[in-house]
Image 1: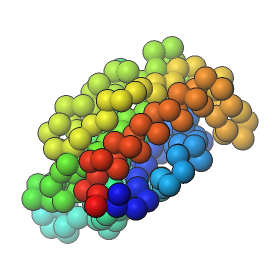
Image 2 (image 1 turned 90 degrees about the vertical axis):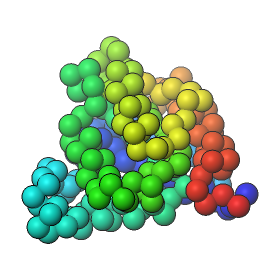
Image 3 (image 1 turned 45 degrees about the horizontal axis):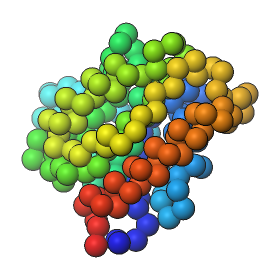
Amino acid sequence: MFGVPRIIGLSGSLRSESFNGKLLRAAVTLAPPGTTIEVASIRGVPLYDYEVEASSGIPPEVATLKDLVAGADGLLLVTPEYNNSMPGVFKNAIDWMSRPPADIPRVFGGRPVGLIGATPGPGGTMLSQAAWLQVLRTLGTLPFFGGRVMISGASKVFDDRGELVDATERARLEKYLAGFARFVEQHGPHRG
């Protein structure tokens, strides 16, 4: 055992009161004992532009995210579903984090990654999570397949304070996080 597993959590929505931001905050509070989930943000990551990268290098917001993920034992992506796929703003942040390509092994290579999500619609985030899999495979991550959290009807499972109050969804999230924490302990880059 390498100590307390440290997981970086990223929400794929920029809206401060998004359902996925609320789900990420719920994950922080429901993480199993001995596991830390730190919330990071994709806010401020500019649109990817090779000319900007070539002339100015990696933006500070991106460099910070890359260092946070590279220093963590696992990564938890909390993804909305827009038009039956991943949000462009979230994909853009991950694309920036893969630059330059020589940094991919440091940031993503062999890193355990969990995918969860919430949507007000009826289908959960199944298509968004499926779309992420080819990206995660390309980046050389270790996706966790030991459970699913794809909340539909999200407006009914969070209260006015943003708390996850639906008992079934809370239990599903707790079970997922327990499994993901074990996966991170077994496969994380900083294991003993």
